[in-house]
Image (tube, rainbow, N blue to C red; front, side, top):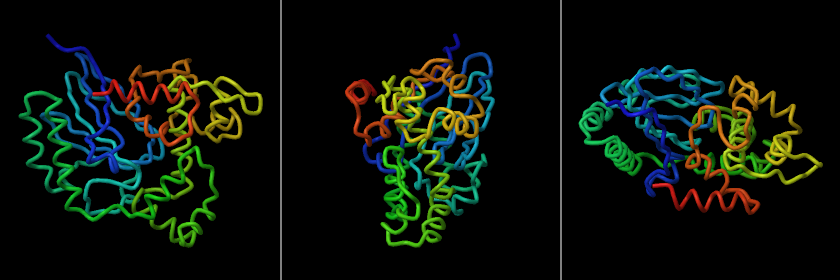
Length: 290
């Protein structure tokens, strides 16, 4: 009997928390599944069990993937500025989907390990354990880029030139380092993280703060840093290909795909001074997530 389609996110192993945003297991049913991938600011690795792994480079636009029927994928979404040890800088991989074995030599043996794992959960654990070893041997993440990413979170509106000065870099130096380590300029990353912040608030079912008299979707748009709802709509079309209402299926507490993205968005909410209902969401989902 074929299992129903499912998608389960969870936090990474504690040792990966600084470099990995979330991990997941996705299963398709007897029919192919159309997946809309949105820009997150980071790269992803997708391991179809029994298939060939892929690296999804930093996205600046939506990507539509048709996942074959009866497929199980374990995946890892990296924080902006982090990635598996690769022979290329990330601005060479923007908006590309590439065979991971062509970029990361240790992957060949790992494919066999994951394919023979007793369960998808054990395969995901093996993948994370392998990544832990790789990151312990690899060069550390650029600390200035890490500081820039934290500052560019949507709850901290900042001028890019001011950020460069704070990091004792010129604007061109900051741009170059971000392009190499993240795959996009600081400004593009800021826009991407702002949109992710809006999705995090929507996923949490957050209530708008009421600033400027706005509520509902317009209020969340203002809270996350958009000028108004029209500004949000333009950015949503650019980054998802859909209007906010269509992306969220008309509701402010879930995305149209029906997936629970709590583990992925929790870091965004935790980095913000949250109103009580969002704080409860972070605490409750943190306690329930395996």
